[in-house]
Every structure is written in structure tokens, then in C-alpha cells.
Image (tube, rainbow, N blue to C red; front, side):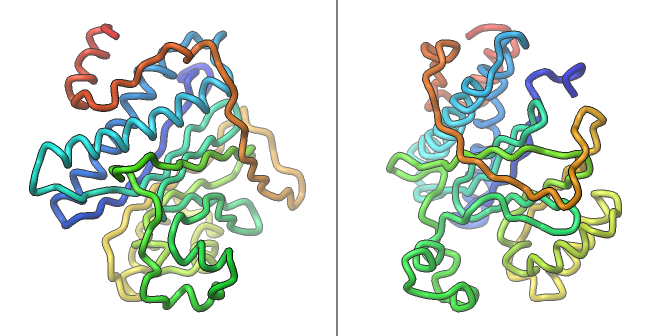
Length: 276
């Protein structure tokens, strides 16, 4: 990867809400904004100047800009008032996955012999589990299990959770919406990933399993097989370590302006023309 894309690879899923049409717009606007912000700022740094602090700050700003973009669209279109979207985004860079989480879509890593959930749902039932109000088993059937506490497009500042995971050769990174992880238990997802089938076949099997178990929601799944020779081989039974990095001041981004309310297409056009 470093020889072909020094800024890394962006992978992300989003799950819109607010009605079928508005939900699709919210997820589309959110993903487009994240991509444009990262392309326009982090992606333009010379390789020798890029560092982790700059990436974390760019990722945080990109997610905040995405939330503002969704909110701006909703404000301009009466029929879309109240729409929002989840977001689970990962930037693969220098042997690590840097993740930003908003809502209840998820990121997993499969590393033999097991599957590890590396994001934490931002939901009401997750908070209730944390404070001891309900158990994890009770949460599975709780009537408010789908109520998220953070979303792109919220009228208040969002709290995107950033995390970092060191990758190893052979890891499989799965990003998915609750249409998948809400139907198919983690144990079965792990079983399907353990077979080593191509990504497309694995995702197809996951989708079919979700349908067999009820298929009560549409789903999105994205699967990366991380077999780059530049990644270190895992030690025997090496665990997946999840770190919440601390944001620090970075002069590279000190004066950057994400223009969160500028229409996405206009911003993309300006970037492609080489304008700031």
C-alpha cells in the first residue's frame, strides 16, 4: 500500500434514518462528506509530513463535517427534516486501522481463532448495560434496542469515538450495519469468516443468513482481507488490541477549514480543480 496510496485506504458504511428516501440521502451525504474532507485535507499532505496526530484530527473533523452536511441538507429540504445516519469509518494506514464510530453500525476484526468487535454501539441499551439497568441478554429483545444516542445530522455536536488497532497479515476487517449484526450472532459471523472464502462470497453468505433469521432491516456489509506483505504476521493467538488514542495539537491542521456547510458536490469540484 505505501507505494500506491501513501494516505491509506478509507472504508466506511452508513445506515440512514428518517424514512426510506431521507435515510438514503442522509447516508449518502454523510459518506460523501467524509470522503471529500479526507481527500481534501489528509489526502493532500506530502507523505513525509503525514503523522498519526494529523490523521486523527483530520478524521475527527471529517466526521464532524459529515454531521454538519447532513444537518444542512435537512434544513434546506422540508421533507428531510429529522433525517440522520450512523457512520463507521476506518482508515487503513501504516499497519493500523484508525476508526471513527457514530451510532450502531459496527467494525469487527477476525483474527484466528476468533472475532472481535472493535467499535462500541452508541445506543440507549448500551448505556443501560453499562450502568447495570439491564443485562446483555435483555438488551437483545429490549423494545428500544435500536435507539441510537449519536447520529450524523443531530442538531447538537456529535461525539465520534476514535480508536486504533494494529493490523496483522491475514486479518479480516468487517464493517456492517445493524441489518446484519442485529440478525446474525457474532459466533456465526466468525464461523463464516473462518472459512476463508473470498470477500464477496462471505458477504453473500452473511446476507443470506440474515434473511433466514428474519431479515427485518436492509443491510450493508464491507469486508477487507488484509493480506498486504507489508503487514507483520501475528504471533500465535496474538489478541486484537484496541486503543483510544488521545488527540493532540498538530500544526499541519491548525488552519484547515472543512467548510462543513458548503454543498458536497461544489466542494468536490473545487478540490478536483486544485482550489482550496
